[in-house]
Image (cartoon, rainbow, N blue to C red):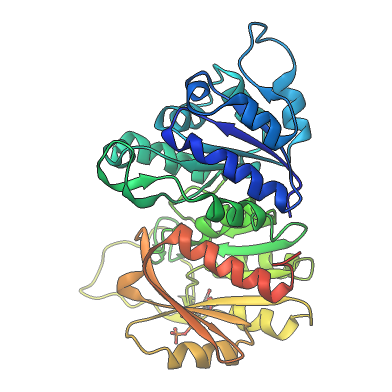
Length: 391
Ligand code: CTP
């Protein structure tokens, strides 16, 4: 549980819900300090906030050069910006610090900042906002989803701030992987044919990146062994770039014994060319054969080395909708969890449909869900299995 929370309130109507949020957080034992932007001040009473938080309330002062923001960043374990307007989200995404709150946001590590957006549907759906949110997520900020329903402007649609109860759940459960080490493999592998050609696959590395981001936000130490993927990895993760399956195997095996969890989200090439031509293969003859030899199964190898307290998670990409093969792979490779998805619903897409199988026979399914959400749900399950979920 996080014990010291700085709440940053910006100028959204949902600011009126923050006194209730403070009460809920304090009931759970958290100490709270509040920072208000100029536009938030008319929307919620400072005296109410001061009384409920039992701490001074911080505004932009005339003496903007005092050390308040640094002191608050040292004090707080989490900066929760709620409600977060499109304007403040844009400023944080671009590193602008033009008031106490945005300056404070710069002084916190991205993984310590949680953002609860609130705005009208058109502003939420605007590509500027969506791109800013994508930037923040990529850097490891925890951006909460928005709710749908009636908005203060009278519109009906997406953009509502999550209810205080849900925010408390996210903030309280936020650091469930604190002190844990995660090793994640991500992206495709590349097997050379000659100096210019490779055998690879269509994995974008988005799932691995989403897992790394979510795990950082949950307080984990994250190492990503990544093939040549296109999806950017969050700052804050230790990245070990590899190309071939053999390089990936070495990088993972070297670190496996030091981690609590290993998630094999990489799309590993099952075969490699038997011989790599030292010069570019010339065009000649009507056909060309390349003999392939089998690569080691990295996951199965890790399964045989797994310690009693370690968790091993695999991904099983299948061409049809049958989870039986995924379950068989989970058992054969000695995985604790296996994420089963279908080829047409997984590779290179932002959303995916997955079924998460557990070796005890239980499972859950998420349909057409954003990979960030899938990553969070999977890591919550992992935290439960590690026994830290309710710490
Ligand atoms: N995997 C691995 N090493 C390989 C191949 C796969 O570690 N050489 C891992 C993948 O990262 C994934 C899991 O094994 O977590 C399942 O991968 P998948 O390609 O679905 O399974 P395969 O064992 O290759 O089975 P098949 O090709 O028969 O579907």
